[in-house]
Image 1 (cartoon, rainbow, N blue to C red):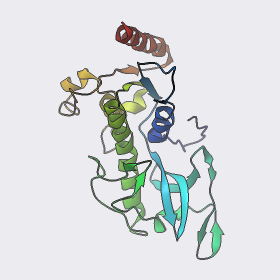
Image 2: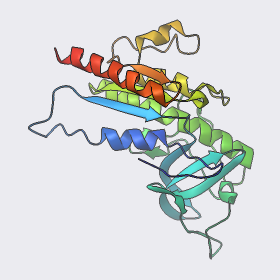
Image 3: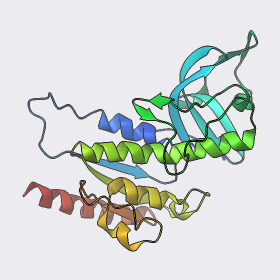
Length: 237
């Protein structure tokens, strides 16, 4: 998924991108390779997720985002600058940021089989419409962080190697739910995560072990891709 953004509105839907890549694997394909590798490349921590939302009695598949101090939606999940219309009290609203007044996030809400809640950051705290914008922003950010890790866990269970590449210092910023780099270590299940305080207890020794590489700037991308290629070649031997 590639989103073009401008100004201070930047949308990182890591779960949506991961799922799009993961769905490319087809076990029924007779010429499919035995080695399956999924590479995630991002320059920031996720702040957006896609789900099926019931807005005042109407269902929408949409992306909801948190940027700055605001909780925003509903965005077209494949065109994040395009806002969806939704019905509120019989009138069409397409520009209001007050989406938190109309969305519920319930205990059993899922997207593509993955629960929105139940992760280490979001926990089991539900959200009821109009509770408050700060509470809505908080739960959105937590779900945005949890979903990619849940998806990566399932992919590794299915025998997929997950490689992650992070670009830029924004990955090192702590947004109250850990850093983007923490998430990328977990998604890859990189053995080096055992030596980091934030991820030491979350390594899964019985799952596929991938690689995380950090690129401080664009000049570091080539060496990161070379590192991943070396590992992939070794896996094929």
